[in-house]
Image 1: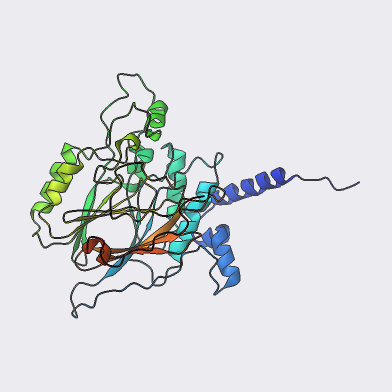
Image 2: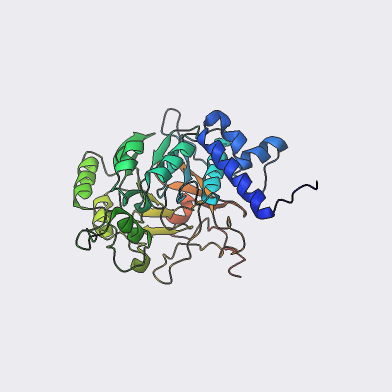
Length: 375
């Protein structure tokens, strides 16, 4: 009897089922076996596949012996995982990013995750993301995004990762993590279910939801947290939404950003690192330097208005390549709190936004302008 033909679609579904079956048993020991990027790297040994994370030389400042040092952390952001039976591309992208970071040598001091681990905030989505992130070798610091929160108002996220607001000191730099995606209640009066509330927030530009904000309670907490610090203390602030007002129609916006900036204004140098916008984004307002992160899921287009002058816009992604415009990165924190941001695009050359660029208001160390502007 002739062998039965198996279609391309059937083979793809069989491979997909095997992939998710293996995820159920995933631990750090198995991670390299499951990760396709790591398998390629292992087979090639010293050869790094195109688009994988490769160490980038950063110009660290020399500091006196015993003084603060320049240190590094890696970033991953905006993976938007669905439940395992709905989408595997985003899962594989997050695994690729974890594999990128795990191959860094030396390892970063920590890994910052910029929020929106899940797409619709379900416990299964968040459990899947937490399972993958547990394979990171370096310590994890994770930010909450709106897609992680509005299904159950953060109940599952807190169970997995703790409180979304915290601060700590490292190498003379004070770090703050803010939950910046609070919204005024638009759902109770409309009688929305948790799923309807989450779907509405996920829409961004639906005209129903309210703008993001940090909120009065966190602003008071932030002011109290910073009150003990002298103005010379270097600050790095993590948020999900940008802590300035970029484009309200897409909720690339934090409604009380001006009040947050006022709290930060007395410090010499403040760096804000945010997710949410899925793109290279650079801004400076007075003493505050802002840097957006790439996503592993997809790149957003740039807003049609309000773009910061310091932003060197990355090339428009290739619509036929689902990974184009996506990636992860590495950040060097200098003793003054300013950073070198290295964006590791998965199928382009890395781009560095150096501390000198924002410190000089764009006059020095200008990042390369893309030559491929559109298709």
